[in-house]
Structure formats: C-alpha cells, structure tokens
Image 1 (cartoon, one colour):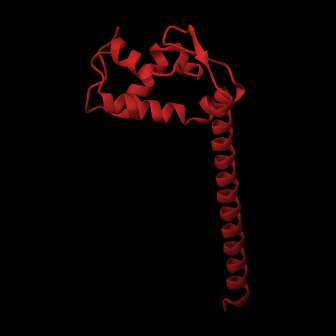
Image 2 (image 1 turned 30 degrees about the vertical axis):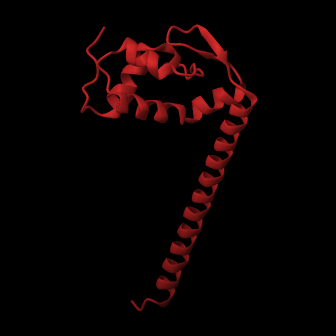
Image 3 (image 1 turned 90 degrees about the vertical axis):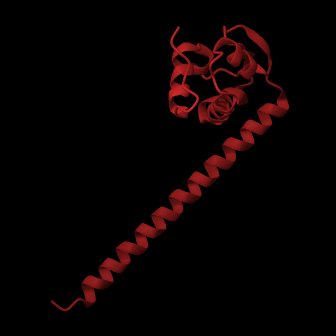
Length: 131
C-alpha cells in the first residue's frame, strides 16, 4: 500500500489514488451510503476535508450520475453490494444531468452566436475598409 496523500496535497492526487486503488471508484459504480467513513478507515492518513471534496467531485461526474440513473446497486470499497439506489436518488441524478446538458447546450449556442457576430463584423470591416 502506498503512503496516504499529504494533507496539503492536491485533490487530483487523491482522486488518482482512489481510481487506482479502489475499483468501485475507477468503474464509477454507485457508492455505498457512508463510504467516506470506510475510506477514512482504510486510508487513515487522509484529511477529512480532502475526502469530502474528492467524494463531491467523484459523485458529481457524468459517469457516476449516469450509473445512479441506471439504478444499479450500491457497492462498498471491496466491490460488495451494499444497498440500492432509490427512485428518488435516480430522479435527482437525472435532473442534475438534464440541467448540465441544458447549460452545455446554452453555452454552445452562445458561443456559436458570438462567433457568427464576429464573422459579420469582419465582413463589414472588409467591405468598408479603404485599402
């Protein structure tokens, strides 16, 4: 087992470690309720704040939310089934995904409109630019 992530280390180091050493993280399987306690026991040198932030990051990823929407069972650190995803949790994950897709589409639309405005301005500048 490798040394725990330093308390002042970056979140990415902890995330990489979890993905490397804990298959349920790497495979984006729904996590057992209270799994943060198991993480603190298995990796005693971890900072509670880092674990909380890493969990928030991981459980907010698209792949994880999609796994929740599918309604797969929850798993502990060893990959054993440990409870189920409720219909309410599935609905919440689906709503979060819908909102993200909506924001992404709005952002892309705004970028496309800005690009079109820029192209029109360049054409106007070329038309009226005395050379």
